[in-house]
Image (tube, rainbow, N blue to C red; front, side, top):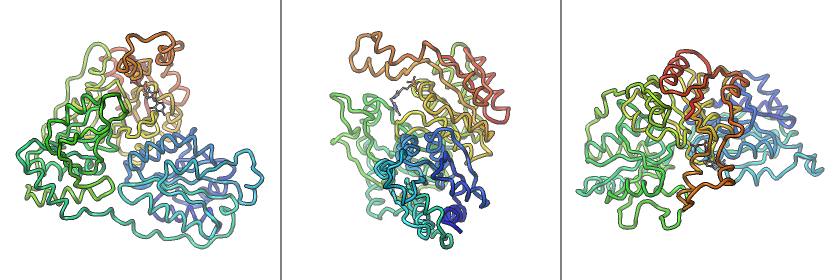
Length: 514
Ligand SMILES: Cc1ncc(C[n+]2csc(CCOP(=O)(O)OP(=O)(O)O)c2C)c(N)n1
């Protein structure tokens, strides 16, 4: 066995068996190993940002590491933005980066670069492999590091000669250690805080918004009368009829402060203290003010599910809370395509058990409220702010859950960063339905310009915000990538096309003109 083979065997044996790849010459031994060893699904992505964003979406849904195979420093750098998003989502991701042969580095060949310096800001763990014998041990450590809940990014740099040299046996990965449990003190304090008379809120994040965490949170809310609120951009949130009503903290600071300031006490469960996305003059960084009581039940790195269940037990809360039990779909919309009608169409038609990847930015504000009691679904959002995550993340989620439909609510400007994901969706025949919210602009930037005090948008500023001249033709782009598409300009047409797209297998794109 050579180093590359021992590496791939170790990954496959550990259950890490999907690789989002864009390889080059320095990765050829790993490509050969993937070819020769059964059990690794290789998914070609035509831009490294698609590899890394897909690994994130896959990891969120599969609850195991997403794996990427990237080419030297430049290949990795192309994928870094969505590793940034994956880091914010706390997704388990393992990056394998091929490097020049150890003896060739001194020659400073064209693709030579300082890969560690590129990798460190987005990785919790970076290692340069030293020899073929150590390769399976190195990747085993990467697997454990990435996989420990909630998840982190592990990057392994592998010289070409180390991939080729003779290696030992693959390593059996030891059991993944569970995240730390919170102490009894934290549970006791949370009981005291939440049983108070003044308005109080349980602020959820991370695994607190997945099935078990929400069940326990609903028990806590029933026993204490506290409000449930969550972070603005959750990595994964189980929603719809049968899940408890959780209010999402709004994005803009004035609205976020208005939402959270009425609560005298805030108990954090799997979330950091919420902060403003940007620093606006005169507006605070932190949304919880010094006058409010803030207490951490569980940090995002703690075992938040266990903490919530222990809290519910300590409160002697009943086991099953029948919350938000009645399915309520909004009526199918009519008229113009607006954020309201777009949201209503998706909330009404998204089938039971669908996965909704939301990077609609300014186009679907009402969706969360409208889908609160719609058919059960999983919502994925973009926690890191590096736009363009939507199409790759939807791609990875569809690979993780081949029995579920993925609906990608996708702003047009963001989609242009990673439209190559459509090609992977077509090649792999993934069940992703993309709705391009085409407002032909970077609309949020226009909003921010006004918020910054501009009286009007001048010609040069408009040229940096408008996506016209030429207008982007999404149906043609999709067709070129092998994805059937349709353009719609009314809510009735949108509803009809979405029904049709959902009834057909494979990827589909609907370009909705706002
Ligand atoms: C990687 C990256 N580049 C640039 C930005 C800055 N940025 C934030 S929002 C935005 C435009 C978003 O436009 P679109 O996706 O069309 O959504 P809309 O605002 O129109 O709803 C840009 C360029 C960013 N957040 N991330």
